[in-house]
Length: 396
Image 1 (tube, rainbow, N blue to C red):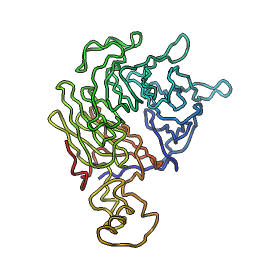
Image 2 (cartoon, helix red, strand yellow):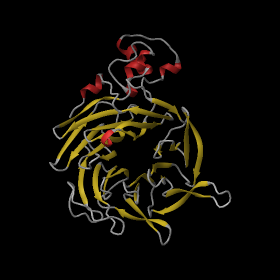
Image 3 (cartoon, one colour):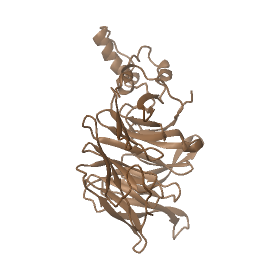
Image 4 (cartoon, rainbow, N blue to C red):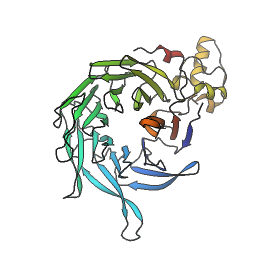
């Protein structure tokens, strides 16, 4: 089984990350107001540049593969588009920011480039999504806002392949699909399974979290015909709008906060349980397949008996010490470092999972994750291990 590539980027949490087109550089936010750009040198990632313009914590980063522009969103209510241009003094290429007029009065929480890279969407705590396009006359990015019927902070967005439809998950416990059609930017969209007439701010679909949890992550399938979203009620929902049909997969572990599709019939989700998990299915049904983190291999080198029945945060030496004391009356000390070490690669919440490499027919072959533990990990999506214990009791 393929071993994941593990890199310790920092000793502080990695809030978000984005790779450039050839994966030779990665931009990360280390839970502060700067963007750190690391370059791959051999088997290490070396800090090459720091982009400083925001005043508060950067919440999201996206790197456009074709235009090579970086967009950042922050709690300071601003977004910047960074482009490489020659420095007037040295002639060297440097990253220069362009301000985006978001017109929001709360934090920007999430940002993503559209597939054509001619606009981007910025989610916010102002109960609005800013759809930003470039105004060449004034040399800045201007925003039109999607507002109704959003009733709380928007936590995530994802673009449909047609460059017009936008999925959004928010803290009002809803996942929605909007039309973000801008007349001067977009060509007239072809009819889709989500609708035919798509003027700006058209609601093409609205779906509730099964048990009333915040919708942390949303994602369109590669074709755009299926929508997935992850909720704080420890569930993954798969939406087929043509039916309409919604599959709700309830899990017994901690909630997921990020997801990405790897093919038309599979996706990877991750979050507070510290490991990326694979779901697969079709219009006939969906289920949890396994984990990309081979916990059995890692546990072999650690305390025998430390792993019985659960995964992620609930499968640590500390947890098992308390369980053994409760069930068997065993007491005793141990190595403090190992007592707090999880059996997963990530030692804390996974904050972001993104496609890293593609195989044939556009299928994602590898994904990357970053977490609160400061690690960057590259996973092979085909290296799926079985899950046991509580995760075996999921409900569809």
